[in-house]
Length: 75
Image (cartoon, rainbow, N blue to C red; front, side, top):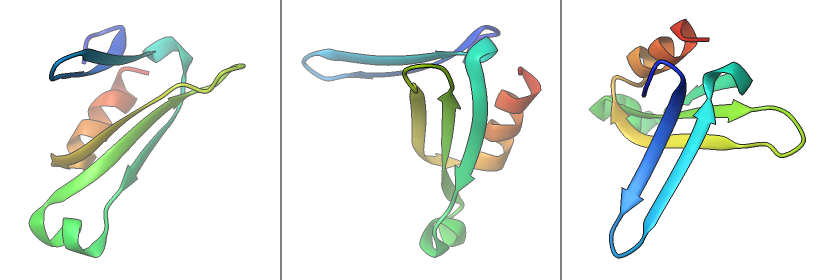
């Protein structure tokens, strides 16, 4: 996370990078199943609006509420 955008990157053999600029974000969603709640994990989805909806989903992170609040504070 930077001060301007949220970046999710995955590297194995190739590179997959997803970015959402904070100025275009229209929603932050936090989800936890019963099992995730018991072990302290959760998922946070950050979505942008506009013609093509772009979203970054960060799965299975510890303290998802804290992460979601950090994103919200940058909007």
